[in-house]
Length: 346
Image (cartoon, rainbow, N blue to C red):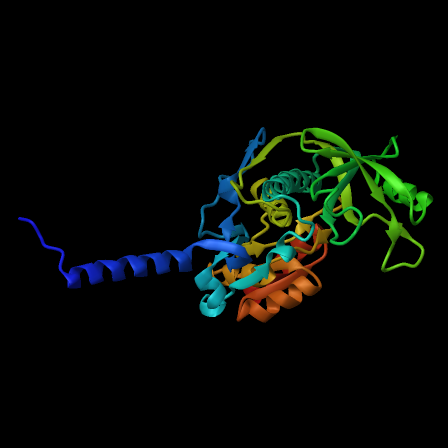
C-alpha cells in the first residue's frame, strides 16, 4: 500500500526534523566553555592490588566501609547547559582559559594529567609503606612541575607534569638546587631549562622575571615538587582507569595502610581528596564544590580535605556531611581515629 505525501504529512516531517536538529544543537558539546559536574565517590579498595604481603586483607567493595576518592566530571558544555547551567546541583560553567590557562593542546594536557595520577600513586605507596615500617628508597631526580602559572615566561614552554632536570646544562636533582640556580641568574636572565616530558628529553629557553610576592626574587612561573625515583619493597598497583590528576594521592595512601594492617576507617565510609607529597604533606586541589556534593550524594560519613580554602569551600556544600581539614598524612590518620572515637562515645 502506497501512502501519498499530503501537505500535512510533509509539514509534520519537517517539524520533526527541525525539532531533532534543535535538540542535537542544544545537547551537542561545543564552544569554549567547559562544565564541571559532581561524580559519585569511588571505593579505592577494588582498584588496589598488593603482591608480596600475606597479611593484606581482602578488598572491600563499593558501598562498604572504607576509603573513597572523589573526582570531577569535566567536559565541554552543551548549548543547553550554557543557557541553563543551574539545572543540576554543583554544575559550574568554566571558561576555557581557566581550564587550560597556559594554552597547551588538549591531548598534551590529558597526557600530563594521567602522568600526575601515575606519580600520585607512586608517592602514595611510598608514604603508606614508610608509615608501616617498610624500607622505601626514594632517590631525588628533579623538580616535578605541579603547576605552570599563566602569563609567565614558563607558560606554553613548560607543561604541568614535566620534570626539570637541568638548568644551563647543570644537573638538577633537589628542589633547592633549582631555586638556587634561578636565584643566582637574577631577574631578566635567559635560562636553558632541561626537561623530561614523559619519555622525551628536551630543552627550552625561559626568561626570569621578578616575583609578584617577593621583591627582587627571580622566578620563571612554575610551582614544583620533589621528583624521585621510588623503589618499593612490595609491588603495589592502583588502577584508576582514565581518571587523571594528583588529587587522589591522600586517599590512595590511607587505603593502602588500611589494607595492609592498620584499621584506618573504623567502620566509616570516608571520602578523601588532597594531593600527597613525599614528605607526607597534603596540598590543596580543585573542584571542592563538586567533590563535596559527590561525597554527600554517595552517603559518605566523613570527608577529609586539605586545610584552608579547600575546607572552607567543602563546608559551604556539605549540608550535614562532616568535613575534616588536614595538612599531613599523619594528621589524617589521627583525625579518622578521633572521629571514630567520638562516634563510639555517643
